[in-house]
Image 1: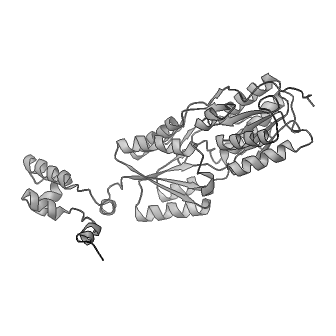
Image 2: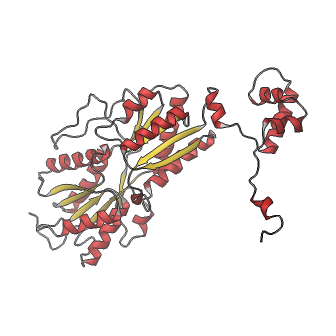
Length: 374
């Protein structure tokens, strides 16, 4: 039996309308419209009274109506085309989004976030958002080596900022793995904020090489991502400069998950000549790799040194604490959001470099013991 008043409590609250504001303020609906849209035709006293009543009632302009009238939607979009299960424990995107939201919220701009299955679904979503005038612009993550999104977004006229290095169309991806990554240049179709993955990888290799490691494996992220390819190229180029070949230093790709990180570690350690050090492309895989080593009785760092990309609380609470490449990830998100706002305000397309990740040396790296260099 329904309790008295329960039906009333279940009834959703009615959103205030211009008619409600006009009734309470004692003015016409057209006067309310003029006042709320900063149009001439009402006195300053009436304008102030209408706005005060609107605030008291909690009135907000309808976003669809604003879009149809040519006004901004007051929303930015962010789409992530990755397996959803890989996002549950990875802190990078949470920190990135927190920085983005900090900047957007200061301008009262909402962030519309969606996870999709693949790049085709992401492109279809951009088309729908554009047709519905759902967003004013988008932040594009995980740039690809062969990326259709800049051309699509430019054809739609949808302002965009790519987060991560994105080579211009006339910059061929080097096939020679000894070729260092070229300096980033402005992309002709959208703005970009980027961090120097190549120099960051060089720091990690410098650290391990200086400790005496000559057999090093890089457990990379998803193949086809521009930053994955940059890290792989940088590792091999830096290794070549130190006289190390592909038998000694190599990369394997994964999906960033703890499961694949652990499985890759098992395969690596089962090799005839296992490495003395592993560089992981995120904190989650590094922790999973450390767990595999512990399960096999391999001491860290004496039997295996571990480096994680993108420092996090996971790296700092694991025993031993993990050496990691650290940067201000929320700050990187803030930089991307600021650049999107600049584009929306009519600024030029440009490439902006973020903070260079720096190595935080901790207990998970040390000189290899009881092993002979090949």
